[in-house]
Structures are given as structure tokens and as C-alpha cells.
Image (cartoon, rainbow, N blue to C red; front, top):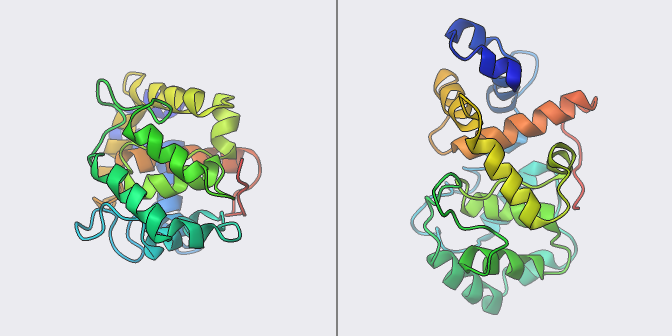
Length: 226
């Protein structure tokens, strides 16, 4: 990302940077390769910000998180859609603004003893819902607040806990001149991405693909739950 940041002042050079190329491949595709399935994450079934379902975990949410190559474990879907679980999840989601922003001063941490942390722990307690599956589900419900935690994040941040992962991810998003978030906003504009794809999701995508390409896994592959 350093080279891309250095090119930021020259829009022509920035368009040709790895940062933009990763996101073009992920969200747009080309004549020889279709875009990645995760590009539909925010819209599959219905948009993530549909007022009718903003505070519920619907089957479409479970379907959408499947675009990230991490299938749900046995019985997890049944548990997540159980009426009692749904009531608890809806109560917590209703207390979290859907436009909550990871950059905000005093942004709620997923590991804190607050509503977002309680929701994270509620989902993590479901059998088969490890950190990766949990973060992907929450990323559909709060795509400006919750980044995706997978093996690539673990590799990039050397984070072994929710506390370390969220803190380091937030620092990565807001630090630098220009910040990673600013690079994401600019790339979002240059590629004319859907407004439903938040800048945090753009950061998720570029981090994931840069690690995939760097490790020789340029194509989508099944992810593991940490």
C-alpha cells in the first residue's frame, strides 16, 4: 500500500497502482475474468441497508456471507434463525446505528462490554461460528464498523484475539497520509463502485486480495474459520 500512497498525488499513476488494480479485479472484473463473488456481498437478497430488515439476521444475510467462501457449519443456520436467538440479536442490532463508522472518535470496539461486543459474543457462542464466520456475518450488518477477520488479516496483523485484530485494523484504516481509508474512498470514485460498498469493505477487499496474490492464491479459494 505504501507505493500506492506515494502515487496518490498523481491520479494517472494512482489508477495504475496495485491498490486500484486489486479492487478493479475484485469489484469490476475484466474481459478475461469475472469479478469476485464477494462483490455482491452488500446486495445479495436485498441491500444491507434495507430498512425493512436492517435489525434482523435473515436467510439472505447467511446467503450473502457465503460469497466469501466460508460455508456455515452444521446446524449454525438453524441456530442463527431460531426465534429466541433472533429476538436477542434484533435487540442488540437495534441499539447499533447501521451507519456506525470504525473511524469515529470513541468508536465501539467489538471486544468492549458494550452492545457491539455483546452481539459479537452472542454470534461467536453459536456452535461452528468462529471469528471468520462471525465477522463476515457482522460485516453485512455493519459494513462501516466491522471489518472481516480471516487468515489474511491474521497474517497481516499477527493478531490472535478480537481485541488485537479490531484495534490494529482500525489503526491501519485511519493512519498514513493519505490514510488507507482515503485511498479507498478515491478508488471507490475512480471505479464508480456501488454506494452500497462502504470504504471499509473496499479496504477489506484490497487487503484480502493483496494477501491472496502475494501467497500465490490469485483465485478465490475456500476460507477457513480461525
